[in-house]
Length: 457
Ligand code: ACO
Image (cartoon, rainbow, N blue to C red; front, side):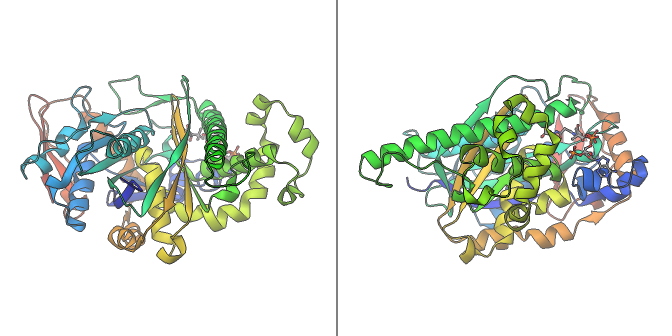
């Protein structure tokens, strides 16, 4: 199969969100701390009426219906989430209700988990399956999503919620390119060791340097492999004519997309790629205005991770490009906040919804996936076909605008409701079904054996 990639996309987000500006006032923090300091605008929220399975059921059911996909035509489903409600039973098995009812139980794949990275692991699995000898000719689904909530404190304004479902197969308009740069290592930056709570344990400063060091290492692994692949191609008479293939840089990317824990982190990440390009080719005329070049070039790597002046220097160098090329992929993040596993793919959906299909055609999109703990990858997607239908079916701008901004107290009350039911059995959600979009799944009850029952609004 050729050009395996994303054939169709659907985003799900709850009906309600809160304003970060109001949250600053509500939390009694300095004005600008969340909106300017973290670059946050709104974040989506839900109460005990929804859980990760209802999110994913809605995303998949809507994808199947909007694109008129026959459930029998799906041969694999890979799920990525870190909000699973069961340590054994995969969220994928709940989705099987939509396929088994159509007589299709021959569907490979289960859940992948590692913080926000599970979606990318799922995507790689699905794409690899289509490209493998065990492929049965049918399409795959990648389904991801999370409810990102934090205990009271500095993490809370970086929450959010949302989910994404993608149809994967050959001849895709959004075709995966073969080179991936990956960086995986062990760190305790963000993790969920408390089974009696939905909230993570976070080392905030470490999570930020971990993200930055991961983008450095993934990007460098990618550029190295890319140069090698180009060199091999040129030796075989394909591609560039010279054996010393030029290194990959941001000049080869039209639209960089990043996992977005909060808006400012994406700006820092993009600036860090520009720093990487500068370090690889400081003589390039586009870096003529970079101040203190010699000091920057001589700086030990570890110091560079903590240097605020360095960060500000490259954020200034990258600013115009960020505003013209990266902001386009931030629509979901600006409205829904962090969607963990769905964040990067919400970025892709935002981009496809922001750039005219004829403009997008032939362009290259880079993707940076980051999951704390740490798992991260840098890879690229080539736009090889018409994205009109994807943009139309997503209807993202209108749907994000239709979300209801509710008071921060309602958010805190929703979290309290979730806390009160966590790990308990025999309960009925108290949250109103009015807060579910038409056609959305919701949790109806949890019985005496912790079994969850869902219904569709
Ligand atoms: N006006 C403008 N800016 C302000 C203000 C203000 N009143 N007050 C603070 N700031 C700025 C700070 O200067 C700082 O800017 P900088 O990033 O340029 O240094 C920024 O706001 C953040 O403030 P801090 O005090 O450094 O950090 P805070 O205690 O608010 O915590 C953090 C931020 C660590 C991101 C926290 O929200 C958190 O733990 N979130 C969850 C973990 C996370 O998202 N990590 C990122 C990657 S991991 C992942 O994907 C989950």
